[in-house]
Length: 217
Image (cartoon, rainbow, N blue to C red; front, side, top):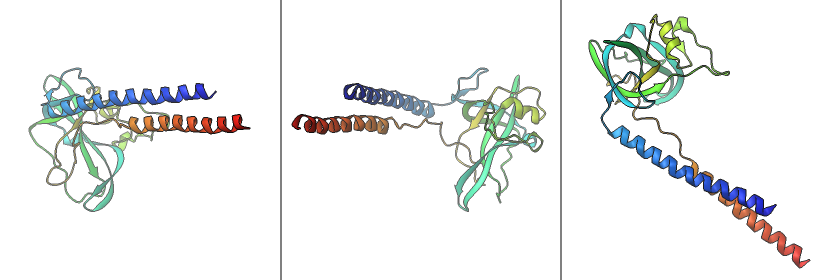
């Protein structure tokens, strides 16, 4: 039993080391993509691709997504993501996540006029889960990032099946605060590997102590 348990623990530890190397390579790829210039938004982009899209923002058709608490100069504040359609020539509108805005903001929201170019990354749409909060289309408040549902609530017949998450420094008026970098998955595999190997070492120590007592009796 000890040999079988030891094999399992060592196997799990080795698997986490392999996952660690894979995750480090993935994070290095994300860092390279983040440093590279964005590409023009294609019709069918891959998720989390760094892109740029040009068009006109329909600030009159904005919606709110989610509920997040951010630390601000005024202390922790509750807010949401500002979703605005970007109308493009010869293509379906794409919903743009312009960034986080405070629910109790004092400064006005920046409303760019005319043709603009948004740089950011592609985020796939979501589907509501069993425990997801209920959306309020009448108030344009959503808790599931479903482009089709949000577009329908805004009166748009067609929208791209993904969201463009704006990236860049915050504007002088603070709102909306765009994403600063591409999303990065957590990398906890080293601590997991140490835990599994530590349990394997503890198992060996316990077995040695038991064996010494058993054979000395």
